[in-house]
Length: 266
Image 1 (tube, rainbow, N blue to C red):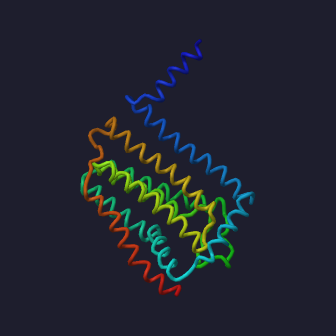
Image 2 (cartoon, rainbow, N blue to C red):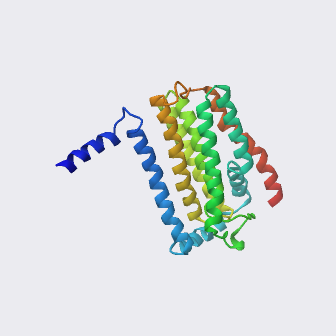
Image 3 (tube, rainbow, N blue to C red):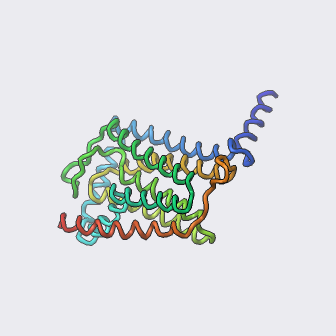
């Protein structure tokens, strides 16, 4: 009986939408923990060269015949959407817009999330130390370790946070749905572009999606807790149409970068 009463109280506490330590925190941390657990399992398989090796190489071998000047033109643009130059430019622009609209808490959480995810990819790459795919499969050259993918992590976290800002600034349900769909398509294309160029295995892409999803869950949970419970006073998120400039800026910046790349590899 005591155990039953305790479980009821625990359930009420974990699922309460009236307190900060309740439903929002439970869901946010649960998603983050699930992502990290699956990443840990995937990392173990990758480190010990288990079942993923055959699948990874088979996928890259099947993608190689798809390469042609037109697909290279397209996927070079896609991959530049999530490279370091675009990430720095887009992060700085987002932070400036948040500061301009006096959303200091959002700016702080956004910066912490980006810095934390960036550091995590550096340490994870060097800790696991997975080599890149065979040179015969590579269309471009990368010097860092392979697992997990930095481009994919950038796309998952940075584009995820920008999508969150767009959803919060959208009033129509169809607009929110389009933003979510656009995010899923863009991130998926970025992941595929890294395999297209032969510099990442499918498991590298999946690993980054899991880590990035965990970071995204933690960051959005912090923002949502503040929005609902005003933990840091009245510093809640304020919708702004200025945030809709971000995807346009990312598109134009990547367009400028990728033309140089095409001239290099052609």
